Each structure stands twice: as structure tokens, then as C-alpha cells.
Image 1 (tube, rainbow, N blue to C red):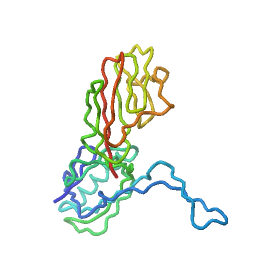
Image 2 (image 1 turned 30 degrees about the vertical axis):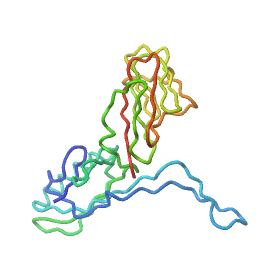
Image 3 (image 1 turned 90 degrees about the vertical axis):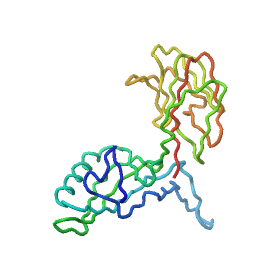
Image 4 (image 1 turned 90 degrees about the horizontal axis):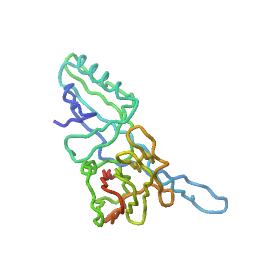
Length: 234
């Protein structure tokens, strides 16, 4: 029997198991079609992003339907304002970032069990758990992106100096904190809750990414660099 795990809690906690889901389906690319008079077909403008994905879990509860369905509904309702990791036990190496979107449709039930569907609003990526591992990077080495997509890493830089990833540079100057986190996903630089954007200069004003394949990394004056790569697929 398959189950999903949401924010670390298995659905089997509520005697809920997966009958079917679209967990392995992919998100669509965000493209804006433009119609031009006198030109056949559309001009498609790529917005350089993917749309959110609606995950539908079709579930069944084997026993104590009223108690378990109510408990599951309360748990999900408490997870409806932001994203939490969700995975299914038959793909343990992959997870999505999901927000319970409030749809809870009971299709059939009796006094023992029942079938129902729930929906999650998910970020488009399916993340690899291997990309959540933080790695200390030695200058002059490289990091390999195993996917076909640019990864937006979290980079922790100790000390002041210049970090180069491929053709991108990150310069840290006048930072007196223990380190600075450069988060390419949320496009922010910080130490804990302290904003450090003024201490970081990015080449081309672009946050660094990890391209598919090998990414050469060098740095000068910096004492240590740690990277959480955040590999993802669709």
C-alpha cells in the first residue's frame, strides 16, 4: 500500500493510502502567445519559468473514516498557507514543495472506510533529495549538475573575497559576520535575519546558477564555501 509523506508525517498515520495520483506528471512552461496581424500562427514569448502544478491525491481510508478523515483534514488545514515537502513512498529520492489548497472531496464512504480526493498547489519542480545535501567546495574543483535544468543553489561564503562559478562571480566585501548566505532561489543575501545584500556584488547583477553538467569553482581570499545545490527535474 502506497502512502504520501507531507511535512514529515505519513498519510498512514490517518489510515489513508494512495489509490492513484499524478505525482509523476510534469508542470507546463509559462509561455505567452502573441497574435500578430498578417502572420500565421502565434509568436510564443518564453517567460523563462514553469507554472505551478496541481497535485491530486486520490486516497482511501480503511477504517474509522469519520475520525481519521477529520484528523487528516485538520492536519492539512494547518498546512495551507505555505509550502512544505511532500513525497510518495514509491519515489523516495524525489519530493515536491506543496501547499494544501483546501479541496477535500469525499466521494464514497460508509461507517468503516471511504474514498476521497485532496489537492495540493505545488511548485513546478520535483526536487532531488541528493540536492539537499550541503557540500564543502574546494577552490579549483567542480560540482556536477546531473539534471537538464539550471539549479538555484544556496551558497554559504565564509570571509571576504571573490567566488567564481563558471563565468559568474560573487564578490563579498566588508562583511563582519561569520558568513553570508547567497540564496539564488529567493534572490537574497543574508546572515540569519540580517540583510547583507549591500556586502555582495554579483556579476551582471544575476544570482549564480549551476548549469547542467560540470561547473568549475574557484575562489580567492575566501576561507570556505559550502553549497546546497537544489537539483530539480520536472
